[in-house]
Structure formats: structure tokens, C-alpha cells
Image (tube, rainbow, N blue to C red):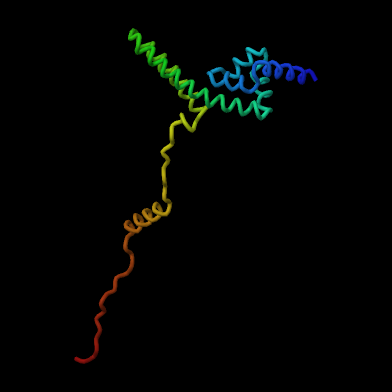
Length: 159
């Protein structure tokens, strides 16, 4: 049961640091589970497993990630503002800044999709209208093959 001892010791460390509130603030301020695991001296997957099996810590991680999305948005703005303030940058600097911002936008959208993910405009398809349009097109293209009525001359015998 060495795993239980390690888990207990890990959770005691987290409790001493501030429990769920510490995890919430750590992640919310832009920290990652990997960096938290490094600080606590364990692997990322082990820490994640320990935290996610406890509802209060899982909730703290989820809320921390939503807060982290705001942090990423603010960092993106800071990157642009710092470049604008200095005014001395090369095309490589702009490309790097653009990439740093793109990663932060992506992470913000992952962590808080309701607020930061691109909104899908959606497409509405009315199958009934499509079917009717197809029938009209086919009907218009059909060749009229119905026999036409012809007048038949008739001899009445009155001559």
C-alpha cells in the first residue's frame, strides 16, 4: 500500500498549502498541473489522478481553468501592448508574438469555451425544400412522352 502513503503525504502537502483554494488560485493564475506536480515532487499524471478523484479538488481544477482562460486573454493583451510600447521589433518578433498569442487564445478557448471559443454560426438545412426543388428540377427536365390525341376522320355514310 505504498501508493496510499504517497497519496496521503501528497494531499497533506496540498492541505498545508491551502487545500482546494490553493489549487484554484495556482491554476487560475496561469499555472499548470505539470508545474504544480513539479513543485510537489510527483508526476503530473499521479497528481491529476489524486485531485480528480476528489470532487472538491476536481471542482477547483475546473474553476481554476476557467479563471486561467481570463489570465491567458490578459497575457495576450500584454504581449501586444509591450511590443507596441517598445516600437523596436523585427518581423521575427512579430511572428513569435503572433504565435504566443495564438497558443494563449487556443488555451483560453479550451479552458472556457463558452466565453472564448469561436461561435459556430451553424447552417440550417430544410430537407423538405431540398426535396421539392429536386423534384421540380427533374420534372422540368422530363421529356413529354404522352401520346397526343389525334383527330380521326370518320365517314358517316351521309354522302
